[in-house]
Image (cartoon, rainbow, N blue to C red; front, top):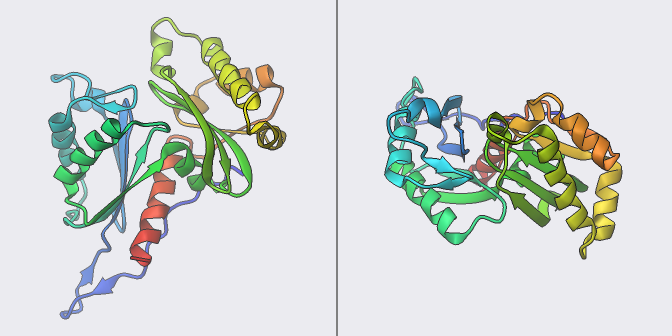
Length: 260
């Protein structure tokens, strides 16, 4: 269930001079610490907000864009690393944290409109994109996405979010006062909350399959073991946990491009 899915590009189109024209499909993941962009026929590039914005401060906090102009400027700088320019008018699929507010989504929309001027912009929950990008979207699934400053929990049914929770703690807090056990306790609490709700039977089914762990936490020593021990279930770490959501969003973007 942890085989990563890499976005496949459609056949390259040509213009009247038989010159190649790259498809305009993009996927974007604006994380609290890192940003990732996947572009058709260009591949994936990523950068750290901390590295890029050392002089301006944090631009995304706890999964929320707090500096629209700053994010747009630095995202533009990042995209310019592609050898081939990314044309305006792309079909863009953007990851969003689960349970994001309308204000959160609008801030992200303004950043992406400024950088890419997309003809179509679609949001996908990060947990859903991660399941797709990990090749694990079919059936009933529990996904735990532990990022730098946010941990998301979701019960998925055939790739769609059926119930979800989130907490503002992540791996970056481990450099402060948080511990791996504290993050594990949060996972246990939220999954117990899901298990006590109206989707209890589906949660039991998903736990029998095991939990899919993605995000930065999936590569952090001890977290998978701690969660597995607390819940007494198998924890499957995605093969490419840091890019699983971006890969899934890329697959969605290619699908939209093919079926416009």
